[in-house]
Image (cartoon, rainbow, N blue to C red; front, side, top):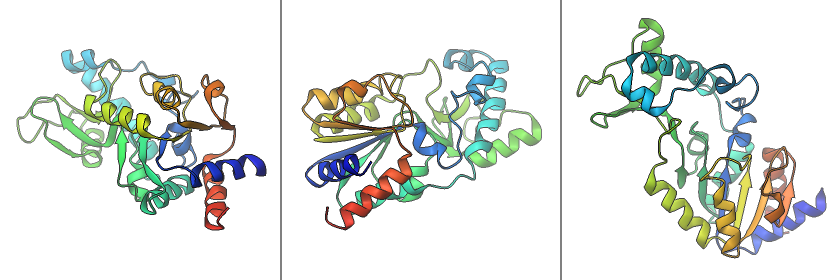
Length: 252
């Protein structure tokens, strides 16, 4: 393991624009389950598609039931060592920023300032009618007490959902465009904790590689894009980044 870690530390040290791309695997180390894994929310329930949510009060109720259960899984979670190292690298100018598929906000809690959330954030609720936004926690508690979708305080609409990208909903165009720009300008992309199967997010390593960047994949399991990576580490993310940080501090 030491040789690949030394190689990754050299990649980082010799790069001018390092970008991190993270998926659920970095947050499972904080105790947040991967919703697509067995026992996860989407394994137990039929997800509510965006069109259904907009058209049906019954679908909105099902959506809120699912989101309340998912909220419990991450509301008290804390950033782990992987999140912390990435935040430190950004502060020291080593890392340009983080592109994440995650909706848990742990990168920001760890101190990262430049975070592109491809799938939005579950820590906020947005009104689809007037775009009013507020913290999700109190609204989840209200739904759990009353069993009713909380109406928007500004326009009284019940078209209120977590500020996440639902099934059948487009990714935020500006965020995706910025993520593509970062990947085109990167000379090193660290893809961590992502299965790299959900597009268009999974296209980002391809974009970086096509532009000549090195691609490093750190993931528990093999991915379909391992073939294009310059280095693949099937290892825990937090432990791996911590060991890389030790090498960078030692000047290796």
